[in-house]
Length: 161
Ligand SMILES: NC(=O)c1ccc[n+]([C@@H]2O[C@H](COP(=O)([O-])OP(=O)(O)OC[C@H]3O[C@@H](n4cnc5c(N)ncnc54)[C@H](OP(=O)(O)O)[C@@H]3O)[C@@H](O)[C@H]2O)c1
Image 1: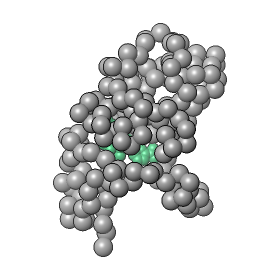
Image 2: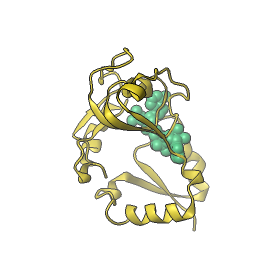
Image 3: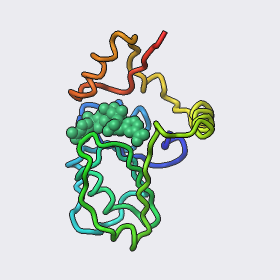
């Protein structure tokens, strides 16, 4: 979605074997968290215009230090850890904003607008590659197991019929 809007996307994955897959989805570069080489000072050299993070913890803290002036950081999840160690410097010296996301509480009018865009101008051109498999309700638990043991690839579509 970001690549087709002209952004240069760096995908971060702890599983380097997925590099080809992530490049096919639009990543210009694929790095591991360690490969990012993030610094530990309160402010580090600017490397990212913005961040979408579903991991939390030290990775989120490290990324914030490298975000450009007025950049946005969307905190979406806590796959690694809920807490992170940060200073206010990126916020008060670079105008960086940390944005929350709470999809479960999204109002229906906003959902409808977003879903409409996700089906039109924001539609990922590689949606068929992102949905890696479809399961029925009876197989949701085992599909969740692959998320928990970190062997899942892409999204699992649940067919509720
Ligand atoms: N804010 C909201 O509205 C909202 C909505 C839905 C989900 N969430 C949250 O977003 C997070 C991600 O959900 P998701 O559905 O995208 O899950 P997911 O498909 O399992 O993706 C999470 C990714 O995080 C990485 N990861 C997992 N455990 C990790 C660890 N211990 N350390 C570092 N990286 C780790 C893995 O990437 P690699 O294996 O490639 O490294 C994994 O693919 C969850 O915390 C979920 O609760 C939030």
